Image (cartoon, rainbow, N blue to C red):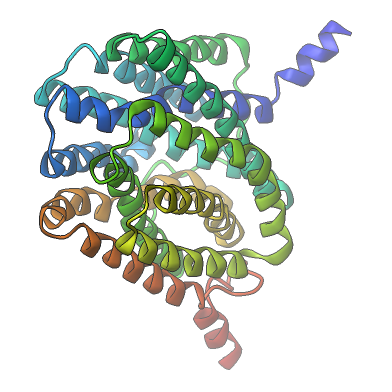
Length: 398
């Protein structure tokens, strides 16, 4: 019985769930504490925050480098090494309360986070059948959200009740990620790859719509990741514990809703899901631009976060149109495309923020409108040869 249980637990799906839990323990802690740590200990303004966030996104822009690392290390092992870097960068953050120190530890953390995210997408698309992919991605989000709930609760406990210093909270959460790294490395076998992956960069013209949607997603996401949280602290004076409780509400909702969103995407299809996501985000960004109530701003933040689960549709859209051997390489390339705007926008919009925070969010609404326009070209039933409605129309004409 114990041997059968061991075999059941040592499956690819379980490893994916375990690694999904490891990420928020570090990244959610880093993000929750960041604005308060940066303002209180390092005296950041919006401009320094924009520079830091641009630096944080550089490893994401360089995510195509994953494909070259696969020449020397297995994809599964590289994912675990990436998690280790995430944990180490987070654990060290509180010990370097200076502009340079925060920049350096952020880059270390970010290399681990972005390379892992690239590899998680690639491994999931390779290991999980197309019919189950959307629901599996939903489960991974739910597992990560559950870990986030634990993270936010621990941060609230450490900050509000135990009154621990930032450095010990960062060390605790990064250390928990490293414990899971050891379990993932020693406790699971190397799972076989069904299709040998390309070990070089792959850019295909027929994936152009996926690339365009990915680019816009990266641009739009930065407005939320960088400036929505900063708005909460700078304009409405949210404390560390209040930010942690806000993130806790987001994560709790995702635990219950993300698997259901995954199933919904499987039922209504990628096109409708993407259109719903982008239409909702237009309204959310317009709300950010004019909000004057801390409570309404919190509601917008929670709604905004829920729409991120709809981004599963972009991953499953790619799975349906991609050649199996393209998945690992294209996952890295698309992650780089996602971060082209992400490298530029935080620093550029950090300067705009100094003049008009509302203008930053109006720009986010414009990006969501452009994304909606692209999503109209996604076919009802994407497949190889049916990557966009334009491709289908051209093939029908011939």
